[in-house]
Image (tube, rainbow, N blue to C red; front, side):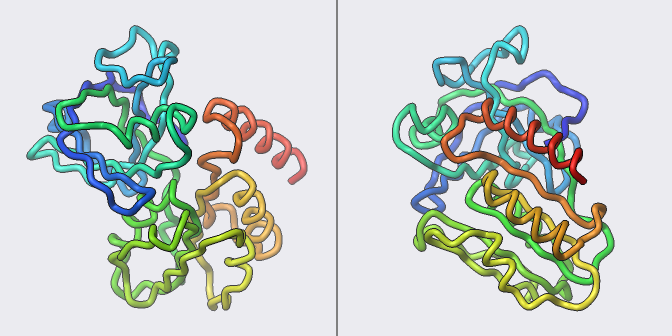
Length: 261
């Protein structure tokens, strides 16, 4: 994800922690700093700060190099009341699940955490005939926000891979956008490849696991030849790798992909 001009991290307080589905928690944080947040767009995100033992930081570090950063989409921001909702996918058990997932399971009202941002990544193309979203539990909050803001006449697809069938959730969307939920071992690329391709130029927005991303990139950029300015595609995580390791893998993959383009 691309960064905006950095802001001083804000120390916020947990107001609520509810289960959206078995593998998704909605954390509501509050603080006066949120009342001063700028206008945010659909792709806005924040970074949660943890120490290197996996504990949430309650005091801003001297440098962001002194913290572990974990990136999450802003699900909802209420500046007038100084609250923000962050939907967090859960995976694994205990500390081994990663600092953010572990914290999301146990965060209680009154707990504090430092939050950096907001920032924003590349959004959906401005002009399109139809839309295509593809993602998993990690990008479901962003896809949900996009679907809520689309015009009522919008057509297309949202293909979303969830951990279990119990993680399927109701989404507000235009009637013409078909949501396809994927469970089990099926790959996102295979599911998207099986879609009936609509006429005209799509705007595609894809964010998912590293291997799924590469399969979808091959399908959409190389086979379907979606123009670069109509396609956002990114990996948010990689199976079996930490976020820091994934960043290294992601950078190397992009260098190799661009060299072979």
